[in-house]
Structure formats: structure tokens, C-alpha cells
Image (tube, one colour):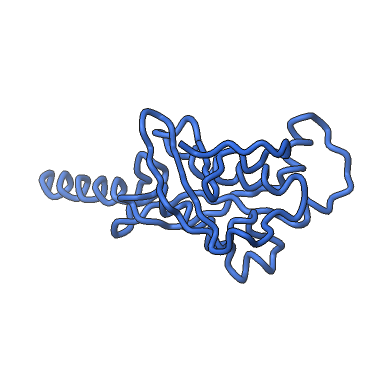
Length: 178
């Protein structure tokens, strides 16, 4: 009787442990893991309410919200950026979410080394206009940065877009990527 109770307790404990989230906060699902991707929310962009703090003002200007995606557990950073480029689902679009101007991009390279993620993106149409306003390049850069900084191995992000590192700089000076 005691042996049966001990065995049942062990089985119940194993069943509970199997349902607990892993160290990264999600259940392992056939080689997949959950990540956050940042999209624009149109409602926040159109809000007329004054911000209550400097941080709230920055968040209002960014108007970025996290959305969860399942990606490959072996290359989660690349999967997260691919999900960012793919943009919101039709349901998310209906809720007012938009891509942070990441559509029509391809990942040329993505390397994470000594805490720095270096990502090189290329436009499918490099001569096409990309930025619909002064804050658009900044929002895009922050969306990529937040998407990559969720990983514990990433402390800093360097973005190269069409061979230019300072794509979000309005000075006119071009800094080529290394």
C-alpha cells in the first residue's frame, strides 16, 4: 500500500514538473520556443492624451507593443527577426497593430558575439522610400533592438540596413557598415 502511494506521488510530481515552464519562461514544444516581437500600435500613435512622465512620452512616441511568436529553439534570434519582418497577423492588424517598417527586408546576416548582436538587413527594393516620417527609422531600430535584447546573450545591437549603420541619422552623413 505504501509503495503504491509513493509511486503515485512520484508520477503526480513528474506530471506537475512536465507542465512547468522551462528556464526561458515557456514550455518546450517540439523544438520551438516563444519569443516577443515588437509591432506598432496605431491607437497609441493617434492618442491625444499627454504623457505623465518622460518614459511614458518615449513609450507613446514609440507605440511599440510585444506580440508572442513561436520560433525555432535552435535559432530563436533569427526566428524572432523573421517574425518581425513577416509582420502582424490579419487578426493583429484588425486590432490596430502594424509592422514597424520592417516589411520587404531580408536578413543578410545575424551574429551574436560577446554580448553584441550584429544584424545586416537588405531591402528587396533599396531605392524605394522606406520611412513615412521622422520617427519611423527610430521606431524600426528600437523594434529590432527590443526583439533581439530579450535574449540573455544580447546586451547591445548593431543594425546595418542596406550597408548603412546610421540609417536613422538625418545629418546626411553616411556611416557604412563594417
